[in-house]
Length: 497
Image (cartoon, rainbow, N blue to C red; front, side, top):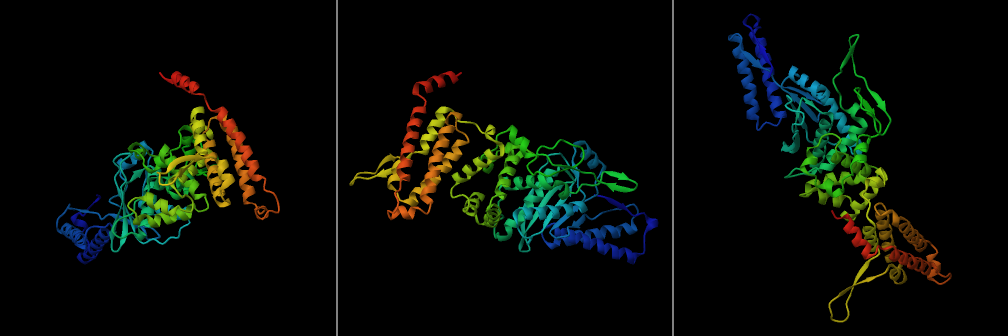
């Protein structure tokens, strides 16, 4: 807290001092209200206390008066940044040694508005904020000190409170502002309890904004001075893997930081993104969890329904005890089941990073999973006996089931084969491709307009018999390629230590 000394010889006219004291009291009162202090009584006491202290200084030489916290409002009126004092020499030294960004209230207020605007643009969402977000700066204590983001209901709206050190890594600042903004958006429909923001969403969107717009979103204090002008330098990097540079660099590929991380480590599954470990939560910057989350969010945003589903999920979050239910409901246009999410994510990972990042199946595992694709269990009940489980072949379905049922099965199996192909042993890729060719060709024929002519008998429908014959040949080849039990045992023995 900065101290202001009032020596006796410099005492001003009493009436002028009283007016200034009243201004100090009002300032303290406004700050107390803005920062969510409990009750107006506390703020009023704080304001009166400032008046009493300053009045005492008129008659007591060398008595110090505590300065009121400095509060800056953003141009949108949603963000309020307060700091108890200017940046201290110790903060500046610590930031220089640790390569941290020092935060000044005026620049931070502008940065918050810019981050929110870019976040809304990514989600294709209008700016209809209701609750304010109060950012309290405090002297930095460590590089990785926690940055709590909470939401409290006050005056009919949910207000966000963020505690940030005055020197921080840019990525952690971005994540805190993104998390607070998402929380405010989600709480528009909240009544009794605040919404829960998925960790992958907050970190993924923060990384997305860092990767594309860090330089223009986070305003850093000028570092150079030439001929009396403060200058900030920046460079442009168009590559997917920018080189380290002491000069701020604008990266035009949002995944430029995530790419090298995901080349070195396998991307996390959706289940792992949903339930991060303590170690993953403790990582900072472009770690495996944050990079996987960014890739997941980036791919969602580039789908047809992705932004719309994300907006609906945010709106639905307050109505569910956990975000998974809100995700499942909002993403129905894209994913019918959680398994569909994993399948889609597996394809996206493969397209982004190639097969080298995915653990390939062994020949034995490949044979087992390929067999599972063509298993069609049904339950048969004869008389009063209990239902019995039996398997039918795809050929039986093609011969006997109606067109709608066939097309549903074919669509499902084509999808499963496509996902399996990403991880299957190279020995089986040719066989999978042949299966895909037969099923896709038959599906196209069954979907074509000529089905009407075949249904009324004007032309012969040879597609069924052709498909069945080709599948019989491929099934025989699959059976022939299946590893022998002896080979499996010897392989297991040789792998044992």
